[in-house]
Length: 234
Image (cartoon, rainbow, N blue to C red):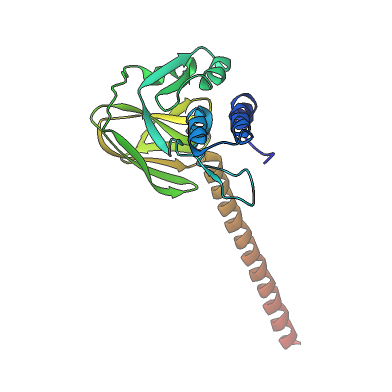
């Protein structure tokens, strides 16, 4: 669709098109299931976007990508880069399943955090609504979670066990968040301030208009009653 975030468009131009070209090249070489699996395993950007299916022929079943990362995962390493250009370039060079690229602007969010890989740690999406996503996590040590959702700071808030917590962006477009050890419920809610303010203004304006309309009706009724009394006297 032509309407998209500029940052996502830049990801398409610099990374996703390369992944798509790999898929097309593979399909043109009379692929086997094994060769397709090997190809999908290398498509880090498509996999971090949780691309589970590829439709290449509307008359045939879609290709199934077994290597999509899912809705969220914990990473073992953080790569801090100096600027946006380095971040966009690095996304295509790393394995996003293990490493997340973070712009230096968000380095303060990582202060005091040391990755501690936990092979038994889990994080999964348990409830989905367009404006409310809920996850459950369990880990023996603090982890850094990456969510396969587009980061958009103007409106989305993150909560852990009902408490508002900071989150930031990594891998150019995704959401990243520190998750403490133990079992937790993580929730992303779309709560735009501008929308709430606009809604309150709209409700207030509606109430004012209703009062004005009632006032006009009351004045018309009074005028009608006054004319009626005057007519009876005559």
